[in-house]
Image 1 (cartoon, helix red, strand yellow):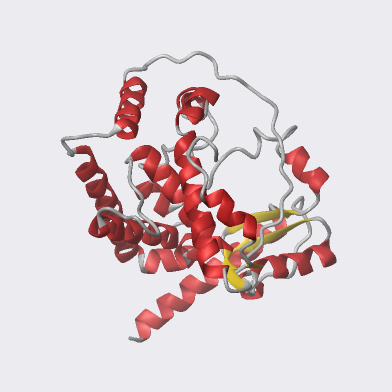
Image 2: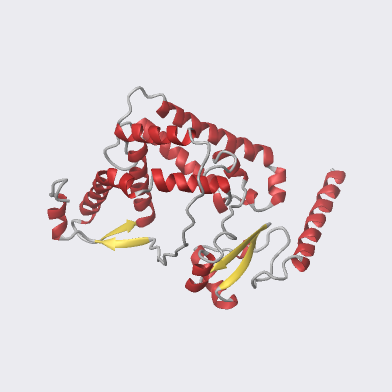
Length: 318
C-alpha cells in the first residue's frame, strides 16, 4: 500500500513538473490566459452557463484569449473581425481536428468529414459532399421533406401555444427538426416527435444519438486529463467500442431492409458512386465565410391567427 502511494505521488509530481515546464517554455506566444493549475489547467474556472464564463474572460483578457482544458489548449475568439480572419486568411492553419479517443472509434479512426484533419482525404470528402449531397439540385429533390417537417413544427407550436404564451425549449426543438429532416432524407423515416412509424427503432436510434453526444466532445474529462485516461482507459475505450458496434449494428439493420424507399435508394446510389471513385480531381478552393449569430436557449411564443391559415394550405401552396 505504501509503495502504491509513493508511486502515485511520484507520478503526480512528474506530471505537474512537466506541465509547469511546458507552460514556461513552449507557451510564450499564446494569447493571454488566467492562472492555471497543474493537470487541470483552467477546468476549475469553467462554470455554467459556459457562454457567460467566456464572456467574463473576454472582458478581462480581450477578444482573443486562451484556456487549457487539462492538456488541451483552447483559444477563444470573440471578435467578428478576428473570427473572419481565422476562417479566411488562416483557414488552412486552423482546419485540423483534435484526435480524441471517441472520434477514433465512433468516426472510424478519424476518417469522417467532421473528424478528419485537413488534407487530401478531407478535400475529397468535401468535394463529394458539395457535388452529391449539398448541391442545389440534390437539395431541391428533398424540398418537400423540409417543408413537411417545418409544417409539423408549426402544428406542434400552434397546439402548445393556442391558449396563450408558452415556453419553448429551442435547443431540443431544432435538434429534433434537424434529425427528422436528415433521417427522412437518409432512411425515409421520422425518429423524433409524432408520426413515428417504428417506435422501437426510433427509441433505439434516439438512445444511440444521445449516447454519442454524451461520449464525444468536451463532456468527457478523460479526453483532456491524460492521467484519468491512463487510469480508466480500458473501461472507457471498451464503452466507446461497444457504442460504435451498436451504431454499426443499427446501420446494418437499415442496410438489410429488402425494400428501400426513394430517399434510401438515392443515398445508396451516392454511396456506390463514392466507393467506386479512386482518383479525384483537385478540390475547389473557395473563400471562407463567417455567419455571426446569436443562439437563443428558450423563447416564449403564442400562436397567431394566421398560423391556422398557413397550416390549412396544401403542399403546393405552402
